[in-house]
Length: 176
Image (cartoon, rainbow, N blue to C red; front, side):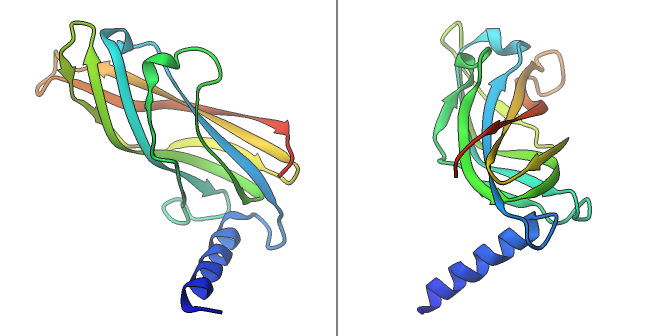
């Protein structure tokens, strides 16, 4: 086995072991979707956001340690198109079965165009949210992250900020 293959197998084993609540837990499916809450989003004709990764936190890990980062496709999503409905699909992947208690997203870029055709910078304020959710074999856990945009024009520095408002989950039957 080549050096790269051995490294990939070792890294996979570490990630699977870190994510599970029990040493013998099986993989389940995690699907992550994003929606936008109706705050200042009506100011925009489009707001393309690139979420490069999501993080999940195993319930068995210390609060500030143990986060498992999962890469997304890196495609930008126009969140003005996802105010209602199921949301835009960010990620669907197998993860170690177990209980998780935290969720975060990393935004690597955003490009907004206001209704008046001006471009607007939107600063993402990163934060983790508490969300207790299971991942189990034979099921898909769908986590929907609700983003919101705030008009900060009446504050020093002005502009717009985007934050995670919260997240919800539901489980559905699925085949791996």
